[in-house]
Amino acid sequence: MSGQIFYDAKADKSFRPSWLVNRFIIYGVLIIWAIICLFPIYWTITTSFKAAPDVMKGNIVPWWDYKPKWLGFKSLGLSPNTIFIESTVREEFLKRFWNSTIIAVCSSSIAVMLGSCTAYGLSRFKYRFGFMRNSDISFFFLSQLILPPVVLALPFLVLYKELALLDTRIGLIALYTLTVLPIVIWIMRDQFSSIPVELEEAALVDGLSLWKAFGTIILPIALPGMVAAFIISLVLTWNEYFFAALLTSSHAKTLPVMVASQTGSQGISWWSMAALSFAAILPLVIIGIILEKFIIKGMAAGAVK
View: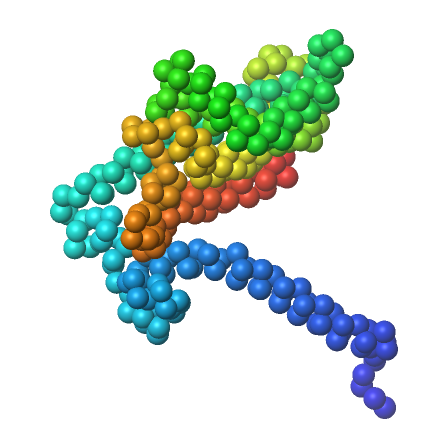
């Protein structure tokens, strides 16, 4: 008498190989896509440690194709043997880095605050301006993304010249805030629309004011969306080059302008450009990792509620 009681059906036996093949294809495609996305970052980091001949030969693997050197960081005064020596290039880099930090953080924060208030109003109240309704107002904000930056270049250049905002941080902060504001409104409107209105109604019945209900109930639930909108805005404003190059000359120049300036009559200094690019990428990577954990924590807290 056989001791086996349960037997696998023929359909189950044929399902296992197909399941393994599907998994192999899916993970294979994801790995290839990850390599394609991460290779530019890898190339940037490795190029910052290359000498000119290594760059021209296309050497990729350190300690195998070439011996890493601090040439890129040395040109910026950021190598171990030059970090404590006075360097005008390092002072220029820190100034541009500080400009990018102030402009990106301030414009993203202002855009998130204004965009969240606007999105909350569009998701909770009904507005009527002539023929325009809530959906028309939302489309008006999103339609601002259709205009290419080149179309706005000359009007902003003339306007900023008259207002004495050329080559100022305030001018770039105002412009970047207007640039990312439609994206923030779009993200936060969907976020607020997914929150039941009954939560606010129950809070109002309990005696809370509208603003207190918004701050104590709605805002914590919508916080992951605000963080996501802040990250997107921060990345867009940090990497913006066109308006920064057009509207600044010396005082308010940002890191992308400094990276693009690593070209001269003798060609492109790839090692310096790679070192600058790596220094510009690193803060975004750190902020993204920190805020990604915060988003997951906020989503889990919202699910528990």
